[in-house]
Amino acid sequence: MTEARSSDEALRALIARWRQDPRSTFQSWFLWEERLKNFRSIRRGLELVVAEIEAGHFGNTYKGSSLEIVVGSIAEQRQIFKGADHAFLWKPKLRIPDIYEDSDNQRAFGRFLHTCACCDGEQQVVAAIRQLDARRIKGLGPAAANLLYFLHPVLVPPFNTAIVNGYNAITGAKARLGRWDDFLAMRQGILALNERFRDLLSNDLGAIGGFLFDVGSGRYPAPPRGGDATEQARWEDELARVREETAAQAKAIERARESDHTHTEVQGWLRDLGLALGFEVWVAANDRSRAYGSGRLADGCRTELPAVFASSPAAETIRLIDVLWLDRTSGRAEAAFEVEHTTSIYSGIVRMLDLALGLEPEQPAAGACFLVAPDEREEEVRAQLARPAFNRVRDLALSYLPYGELRRHRDAIARFGSGLKAVRAVAKPLT
Image 1 (cartoon, helix red, strand yellow):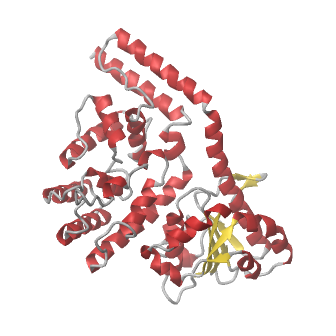
Image 2: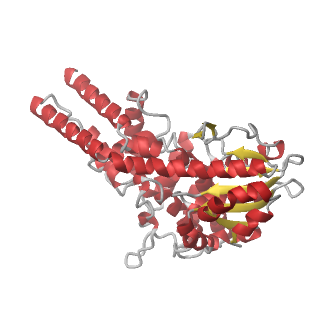
Image 3: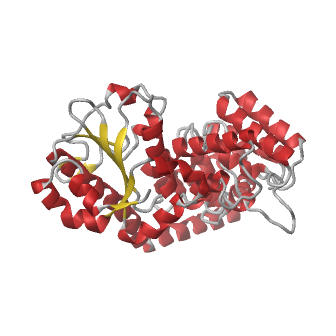
């Protein structure tokens, strides 16, 4: 009993230190405000994958598919999901994962995603996993749990090699990478571990997933499970070393914070420009309280979306669009802006599609849509839009607005401009 209590105390101390470390996944990914925006866009992307499979339009290749875009968006997130796309890449010599050439397996994968997207209970999710596992589809293992995490973050933890290694190191288990039954057993252990330390973690299993990732990738040593004083002293020395490394790398942390600051600054430019041109302005719900100038980013902006958007099935996504310029009389969104400083272009495009296509035909929708990004990201923006899965974007009046053009001309547009004519003049059409 004494050893168990000592082990719990050591693990609690480790989690508490992990929470405070600016380089941990807790600080740099889990608390990252942009993280939450990805949930809706990834869910919508998975709905598209399911629809294409059901219609027989998915095709027989990963490259350029709707699945590549969704998984690529996951893989672009910080740290924990790096390499998440590897499991879905087509490996021609091994002919895996076998969801591209075998149409029955492909449809089973589609049913699996559909079931998990539509259900809201633990038993249904586990049953869907077991049903997929029963087919023994070559190469389609628990890496698919990363898709489920974005559908059910309180039910399914993220999954990769480092998380498995971290779980085994913390618990003494011997979970294996490629087996669904091992994943389900590990999931139960993670839920129990999360419950023991809930006050330091979260209902969202991304938090404990991040902790296990940092342990499994060698960022933190796992505490000794026995009562050996020598092992305890060695572990404490390792933690001290990590703390010293963190202090030495403070500059990298500041650079990451500067990226978030730049995103807010550009939102502020667009807010001020929209107000100067006579529009009502909406700022993304999760950015409203950010400091900007001598106040907050949402100062002078609408506190609620117009009713036409609030009642839309896509309301949760529209609330997260970085900036909307709204007609003061009709409530129509005359312009929508997604600022993509370092984040995935994919997520911004999906939110634009939700705004433009998520309303009834007779309702006011979007006038013009702008992807606002650093000048050097133009090629990346155009490459994303060239993907077959984004063919519906051609229906939008979508333009690329470089930071440089916005910075140089925003004051003149605010003083002498009217409507969207001047903004369109400095933007570059994409469709």
